[in-house]
Structure formats: C-alpha cells, structure tokens
Length: 447
Image 1 (cartoon, one colour):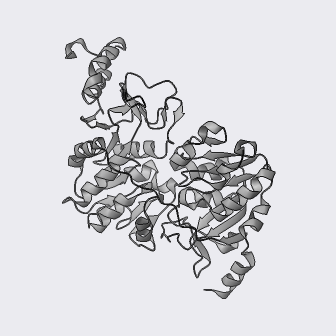
Image 2 (image 1 turned 90 degrees about the vertical axis):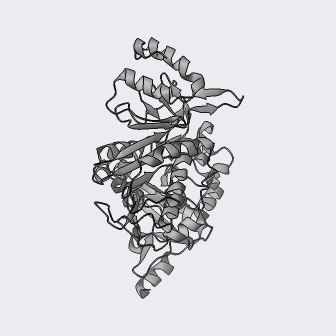
Image 3 (image 1 turned 120 degrees about the horizontal axis):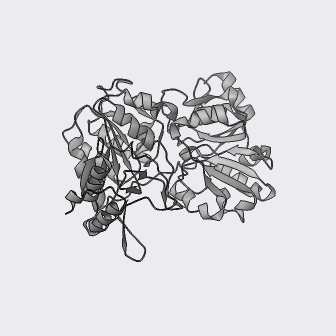
C-alpha cells in the first residue's frame, strides 16, 4: 500500500465515540443505505443521542434495526426518513420517528445533487482501503457517491467482511475525501430469502414459459422472483443476461449453474449490472472481486433509456393489490405503509419499451386476514389510501396463481374481464357486479 495513504489513514483513524462528537443538534445526518448503514458508529451515536435534539437522518432498506431506534423516546431526539422502507423500518412507522421519502429510485442520485442542499455528516460502511487509497462501497452503490458529494463531514466505517464489488463507476471514495475513519468488523447483515409459498410457485410456472435463451433479467423483492431464479438454475435456458436494481441469491444460483453469461446483451456485454445487493453470506462472498459483476449507481441501472436499450428485457416484480382498471399498488395496504416505490415503474416501462421485452407484476389472488378471512387482491378500485405505483397505462402482464394476462391494448371492459378471470374464484361474481356498477363490464360477457 502507498506509504502516504497509510500515513493518512493512521492520521484519520479514530474511535466511534470520538467520531460521533462531530454531530450537533439540528444536523442533517446520512446513514447511507442497506448493508452500508454503520454499526459501531450507530451504537456510539445511540449512547450520545439522548443529549441531542432535532437530528434529521436519511437512510433506507435497513437490514437490521439501528441501535438509535432502541433509545428511550426516539421521536424526541431524531427523525429517520427512509428512501425505501424495509421490514425493520416498517415496524416503527407508527411511532412517529420513521417516515418514508417518496421517490422514483432511479432519480435518487439526482435528488442529492440537485435538490438536497447539504448533509452535515455522512457515515458509511465500506470495504478496507486499497493500494490506491480508495474505499469500496461493497455491494451498495445505489446513490452513495452522489450523497457523499454533498457531505460536509465524511466518516468511513471500515469493515473487513464487506465484499469489494468492482465497477462500473461511482463505487468508491478516496481517502483524501474522508475526514475520519473507524474500524469495526461486525458481520454484514444478511437477508433471508424465505420459503416459497404455493402461490409463488404457481405464479412462477405461469411466467417461466415466457422466458427464452438470451433474455436479460431484472428480479424484484418477493417469493415469485426467487422461485423463478431457482427454476432457471435447473432449466435448459442459456446465455441469459442480468441488469437489475437489486442483486439477490437467485442471480448467484443462475450464474453458478452456467445459465448467465451476459454475452447477448446490447450493453455491458459479459457483465451483470446491479445497484445494490442483499442476501446470504454466500452471496456476498460470491460478489467479492468478481469481474462478472458491474457495480453501478441506480441512476444507470434503473434508467428507462438504459433498460429499454437492452433487447428481450424481462422485468419480474411483486405488488400488494391491483384494481379492475389495471392500477398497481406495490406500496401500501390502504394507509398502512408496506414498501417504497423503488424502481418498479422504471423497469415496467423500460421492459415494455425494450425490443422483445416483457414486464410481469405478480400478485397473489387473495390475502388472508388475522381472523382467517380472505380479501381479494384484485379489487374494483384500490382501497382508500393505497398508492398507485404503476398507472393503468403502464401495466403489461399481471400474474396470479390462477393465470397471467397481458392487458396492453385492451379496453376497460377487456381489462376488467381478463383481470377477473385470474382473480380467486370465490370473488369473481362479486367483481363482475362491481364492474357493472362502474360501467366497465359488457352485458354480453356475463358468465
């Protein structure tokens, strides 16, 4: 390692308790993103937070609960605005200190550069410094380079368990731009894939015949995308490409099975582009120094113009509910927040504009309530307070366990008929009656 950089490193090295002393009441603090959120610095700040007030924090997609969430009366001391709420953050949203920042994820780097005045302090977990003096962001490129440009004080938390993910671009920061360094080797948090449900398996079976050799995949969060990945790994498909926002274990499984080469991609030939990753420790080890992968900011991976330039692009995402007009809600159950918009709309539109592209939205036909009753996820209109993530003009394929339908080119009555046809059988008659009231049902189509 360059001796000058080693000396600079030692000069900037400090303890977490000393580092967080720079944070003052009223500051804007950035906690980075997902697995890049700090550990030792977070614990140190939690100790100090009771003496601070009006700290405004930005973060998102937390993989484990931050220590600051566990202090007494957190709302009296700080607010935490998440760019994409994970299950960890969702649990605390009713306590009035965790909030969602509505975004189109592809624009997040631009929000920092053009719409956010400054960040007083940014804390970011990175891989160890390399011989050229750079700290790699690991599997979390996302928007971090843009955020760091606006930070008045940059504190790096070096973690030896963070994989070094190759660029791409905007995947690292030089020591000359860093103010303080702390060291902590708390294991990087993982994200369990979860067991596949019968509905996930059935939806995957409806989608799988639509896949072809050479297609390029984007998989969102959810059971069905995970099942698709496993089915591909066991299939005869070949020469698949990957260009995705979130890199998950399914992509690793497909790659190890020899199904992914990226050699038919129009751009980034031979490379799997991604913005961030979450999954198993095996996945993180697979990503470390892997030249097959390309770490890039979300303004590139999710750009509709980039996505649409890739032939045979296939986007597979999940949603909470859909109405008979074809409006897709992937964010809330009425007023109860579930998730952020993320890049779903970007990929839905990009896939549709791709030569030979297809986008799939997967929705189980029903949800089971706490009392054991069932509610249809295909609704006459979205429930009050539900968020329209994809407008009715953007929907292409909708998939439930009862089938799939491509609504592009359909009139309102055709959509209603097609969507009712893949709803749970117990709710179809009721949906027909509601469609009649809404004047989107043709009398000749009554069953």
